Length: 220
Image (cartoon, rainbow, N blue to C red; front, side):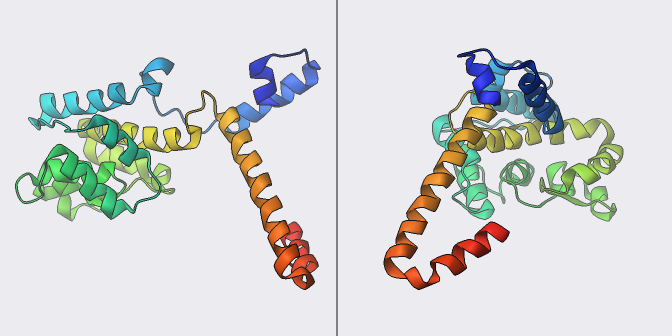
């Protein structure tokens, strides 16, 4: 419905428009890039440039990527583990943990790995804090205020890193589409095609199990 309204190919009952808007509000999530316009959000280089500039100006960490296109692909990929992603990102920036542990820690957090705050900020006192490590997992929003309180002004670095991390999640979901609703329609269509193929396979090779399998799937 949302996709249909965006395309605007015909007029719809205003009650359907209400439902579409209600769905957007109900599932709006959180605003990841409130300081950037939509064209910048779509441009990975702008998001990354903001982080690199901040690291250089505030922490004297000067990072240069050898291949920005590959970096973009690695950050938004779900096909590689977090550990492998960390190593790939570090290699693209030419950063080694033993040579620059603080830069390596920032890239570790960017990759989605659990990272010690003392390493990110090069501050041994953070080792004894209740929140001494950080990871951008599904529970992060529940503890975000605690990190803000602990780090105060330094929390801005976490925000900058998370902006790039969140971009990767959003880019993966969009999969090149201009709107979330377009991407979700494609996911639905792919699921429909996969289910059709699975049913055909079951009918051909284990027809006696067909009703059992798909009755269970409907219940679940």
